[in-house]
Image 1 (tube, rainbow, N blue to C red):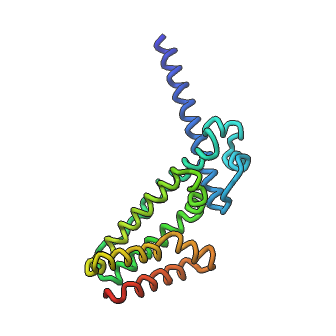
Image 2 (spheres, rainbow, N blue to C red):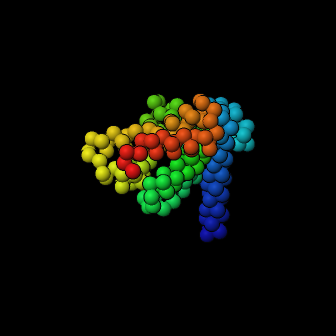
Image 3 (tube, rainbow, N blue to C red):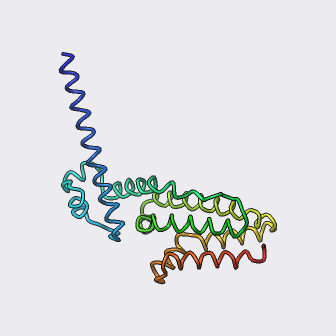
Length: 205
């Protein structure tokens, strides 16, 4: 009896592991397709890439929206380490601007394909909009700390305007406009972002 119970438990564990492997294969396949610039891959595309049948795909996920949410969550966990800024809040203004722009370029390059998908689906999937808002709040908080020596010399109204403008200059949307729409290289986008911040903050130097 004990042997039968043990075998049943092992079989159950095996099925769970097999299911998890297949779920992960589907999510990875979707992320790969996003990275290749395919914003709305079909279930057939995902099934073919993952090696999981279309029928099985919808045993693992309720619908494409759920799969999209899980994939974006996976991507965000993968890039979490890229949110860090070297010597955060330390050094001269030049040092802090260099570190900030370097971090933004590294992060935005990594998340660009999935971020575009999340942004396009945010209006119909509130959970994605919430994630984008959280990310924006984190980056705005980083920006505020990175520029605190300059912002601290300003009045409340000027500080709010300066922070809001700097937030726009260092946003993913600004990066995407320069790189995807205006054809800049990442290096050129970094230089433009750096120059914009420097011009904005020059009276505060």
